[in-house]
Image (cartoon, rainbow over all chains, first blue to last red; front, side):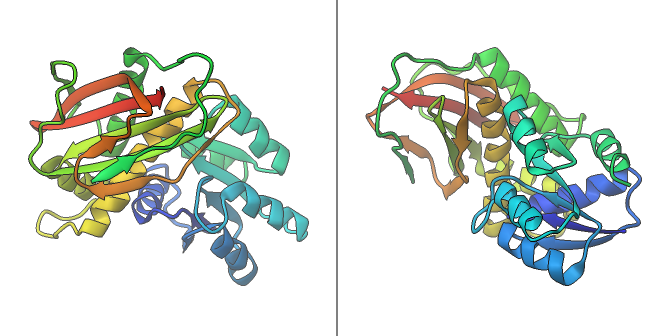
Length: 119
Length: 165
């Protein structure tokens, strides 16, 4: 399985990768994007099975990236990893076609639960 | 210095998260970033006392919309370095660059600010973090409504929230 991690913070991308490993999902191929626009391009070039995306990013945010993916016909599994975990944000994410939203701060268990829902 | 002014209009009434709520979410964020071994310790600091670290990193995010405010985190330089190294899981002998610290401190305030936003009425929008090496300074058109003074590994940490006056 290939996972694309989109976050403008290198620190957070590393924490997500580390947490995936702690959650028992360390065997996947990982590719990284620094913003939503780059993620959009890398979904086309890398064909990931899952996108784990921050919401708030420069260039293109995560929700616009997801909307662009769905508008282009992509049905790649997409989940948010974001500091904004309110019910309003969860509803927006679900309405746009996200499979899940993991709120920061998170635990390996939260990652395991979320990934099991799309594996 | 990080000079902060953000608002076009003032809200009808001041609404702010409680110190207890902010402390709880700060502890959750800290625990997720550094583990359960080393907790943030509350510090008793008199009101209106400037942040008392010698070297400081500061970062802030603004929330605009259903609730308007700015969330600021100030860290002692040593705390910022050690926190960044911990977040990046760097070996002890590997230096932490200013870029690493800016990234880590920005992510810290993003997490705190995003959780503060979730406590307040929406819908609202969270800005990208602004990070600076130096103390935060606040414009005269904002009022401090919440301040939390903490310590980690003996170094001071401050979280404060300002709203339009």
